[in-house]
Length: 566
Image (cartoon, rainbow, N blue to C red):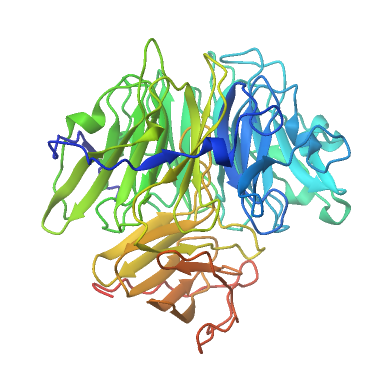
């Protein structure tokens, strides 16, 4: 039975904003504008992935009228540097792709080798319909990144997307641990339906580096024509497998529910999330009322922004400030100050005048509606910023998320970096689930049960915001709570192993793993750096218990029932 969603227009629940600003600008020290690392150009989407395969996360920035950038944190210099340099001998040179007008980007493991490929959506000379230049699907092969779509086998299969699109995202539609690329094309009449590109295993020869690609959108039931805009992937209504939500322009939204066999059914109308008169942009998933169900928050272009809750014990709420129309682009939900509550960041573009970015805290209440409070966004307001994309990750390992904002479209502007001011005394937990192949488990659901505030759920991002993809990390602010339990579920296979660990200042009593090869835990208290814990590593006198991971197709156990309290 398909449950209905409730559209929430959030009323003003706080008379004044928090006086303390959330963000401070650190661009001048972290990424000062210059030709090589932070050129003044038109940029769009941002994806967070491990580009150089060294275990650290980099940010891939889609350059529209200039090169794509790959920003890496230099621990000695304590700043970001672009490793996709203008040198043909560099293994990252092809990623620059100066010919492409890149706007959307996502990363995931399409062939099961444990390393993420990078898909870049180009939209050369076209707003909709056909473009004059194809997208790129970069794989590290032969000691450098190469474009799989340019391989002879894929040229003959006519799989390269030469259509104008917007967002891209990763979805494991069959639960194998190998991902497909969902492409939100922007149709013109009967040209440019949504696409779904994945590896054709029967036609591929991985031992020889041959990866044959196919567009399976029609087979999967997602080849619809619309003005595609935002895409987000995860177990939205399904228990284990990933569903897909698309907020569209000049047409209703899509909510594709995974049928369990690799096909999808659009249930947006039944669920009440079509919103046909609005024009969607940034979108993300979060469990705002902590009922274990995924909620959807997204922005509409100069229309009312939405927060859809799946039904539960919470009553409906409404808020004029939250839904206030704006020229919105990226939307991010994260716990920036590690206080155990989620914030929602709206990145706006200065369009026909100034338009500041905005920040809201959505706080669950035990016996009432979630409370919505507008916060002081600080330096990240950017009233004259031409915001086109944004992403979060923890650059320096201090346990607080950093924010990167890209700009472009109507004016060339450099990238901006912001650091969180608040929450320095709060603790945190970062969980990095991986597939059976060792790649980041995009679309996995991670639940942490804290003693004081109950369950907190995160989805490992496979594409969200708008044109973007966040870090492949479940980041939890723990506030001052000292006891928590972590459960990993709803990902590729169903193995059901248990892990026990004793953590500094916190007790991780149980981790339930479903087809995950490794689950590093990055744990810390105030002032601490990341401490990476993997299977079998000694942690304060206790060891991981059980063996994580399993072969594809291994039958699994049912997930543990969620306790009412930790």
